[in-house]
Image 1: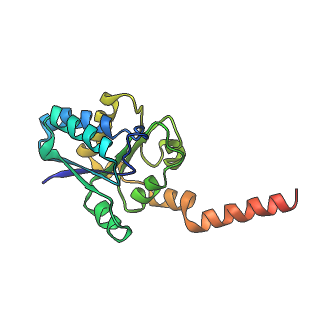
Image 2: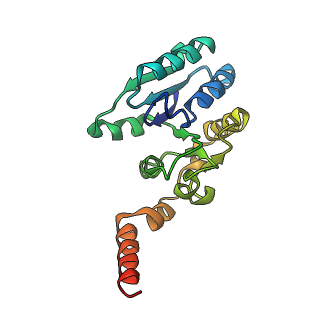
Length: 183
């Protein structure tokens, strides 16, 4: 059966730091041993970036291994997480990356970049794999680790909720507001 990599992000020629181009380069190598691998790259995109991605896909002969559904309505996002085997977005300039929390909430192993706010969302690598977003070989190795043993990389739900649940956010905000009011 197909193994599905999933990225949900804004796909913009002005924001080419999300790392999906590096994932495509890794896919070309992985496909040699894993022809049933498929990459779903979802999110709104501009025409210039779609042309750039199409050229990369063609150059690497990945036409059968990628889908770009475009914008996904909120009510369909959970279904996309459900069909995926992992979430991968080795970004270089992500502020925090709520989408990583969302992917882990749905039980997906996550691969993220180690140079930006993604590190915080993955609790310094305790909730997922952090990779150098400029290193295609490192991205490839992380994908192959999850393909070999997904269960070993499933996020720890208890740690996830301890750090990122609504209650945790609410308590942290209340503490900040209290400290500010009593400073």
